[in-house]
Length: 186
Image 1 (cartoon, rainbow, N blue to C red):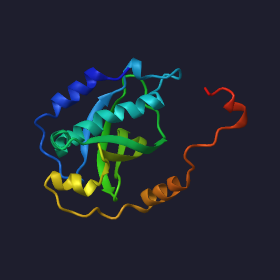
Image 2 (cartoon, rainbow, N blue to C red):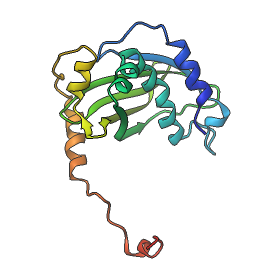
Image 3 (cartoon, rainbow, N blue to C red):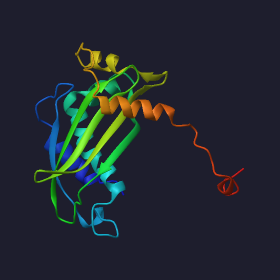
């Protein structure tokens, strides 16, 4: 189930927070609740991705996207991500989430998010988002212009560019193993 109450709390908490420039970080604190756990009594990997919304959406609000996107008939969608898990977050652990956009290209905006417990990084996600319209993908530079920012993207870090290059080689749609084809509807 989507954490609607926690989402509402974050949006209320940051409703009057200072605006963020395009590359500034949004920092928030959270707690791992019993309903966030997997059978090994730690933060579920899928729930981690859902909880990242609690940082990304308030960040987007503070950057002005919740005003500009609907005014232009635009939306935003996740177009890919890669997550690295390194430390456990257990029940009732408090953690800090850092969310920031790190750059963009002609089609996508790239963000990174991480969860920290004390001084240790527990997980880190690279996320690619697309701004959308009825006509297709809206270039991020156009969205930034609508926000009042005329700027070029900083150079994407080498590890981000390597991920983009590797993902471009990934086949789509994926190949279906022969033994799985019979289970698909006709």
